[in-house]
Amino acid sequence: MNGSSLWFPPQGSTYAADQDALYYFVYYCSIVLFVLVVGAILYFAIKYRRRGAATRTDGRDHNLAIEITWTVIPTIVVMIIFVWGFRDFLERFVVPHDAMEIKVTGQRWFWTFDYPEGANSVNELVVPSGRPIKLLMSSKDVLHSFFIPDMRMKMDVLPNRYTVTWFEPVGTGEGNIFCTEYCGKGHSEMIGRYRVVSEKEYADWMEKSTSGEGMSLEEFGAKLYVSKACKTCHSVDGSKNTGPSFQGIFGTPVLLKNGQTVNIDENYLRQSILDPQSQVVAGYEPVMPTFQGVLKDRQLDALIAYIKSLQNK
Ligand code: CUA
Image (cartoon, rainbow, N blue to C red; front, top):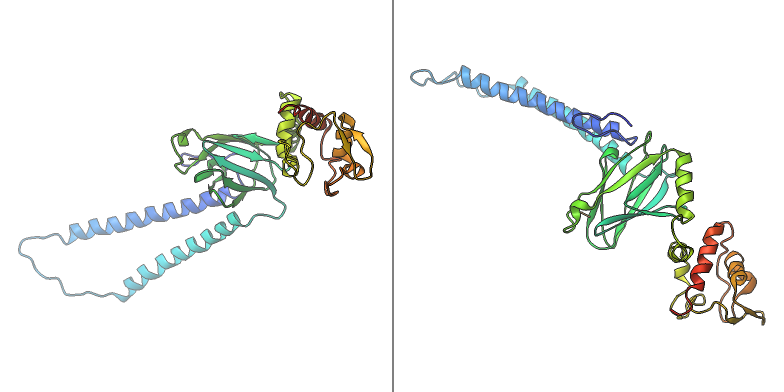
């Protein structure tokens, strides 16, 4: 990442340079106009200052050439700014089709990121360099606003609806993520970090996150139960849902649709996750998708450990 200046942080995204250029165009136009207008005021103030008794000048009050000049030139400048700005606006708001989608959740006072590979992270957004990243954002409580200055990207994050934005990081590097909508007493501490890494580093990081490193199997399983959406169909409080509840099932016999009764052990759970249709429990529809190839071994172990842990809860 480069392009940092006195005025701006580094240009971290593909559209940063163009946005900065537009900013500078408006900025330098303003300086030129300021000098012209203030210069003219000073010039006339001095040239036509009161000297002795007031005398009227020659009563001239109209000059077509000057009128046309100061109408046409500013109009052209404004049109340039409009077209340029509108083009950048479209670029900023139309998400490329091949973008990788990350779910961003704001809540008092931290950010959560959910990745397509199933991992999630808190207050740390990790993205591979050179790929467009789509951010699908919502809030769990009040208004927040997601701002990465280096990417020149800022978007409100609202409860009860999604907002979408995107950026394509260039190079690698890291920097701050700020909340720019006052959201309560922790607002100023709602600071995250982003890291743009190589594809290889991203894959390694993803591998580490999805293997639940540093977590016990039970803890990791409890996390997967939510992130892999087991929760949608299987309760942990004994209530019947689309699928049977996980509560207290381990070690108990279960009647299957095909009339067999089997004991729920580790292998039964493993097979139910990888090949759900092979042993549908009586009274339920065979609607569960297979998780073959979706879950890694340690994830399977973790889910099974989690289900085992639900014996007396
Ligand atoms: Cu969240 Cu300010």
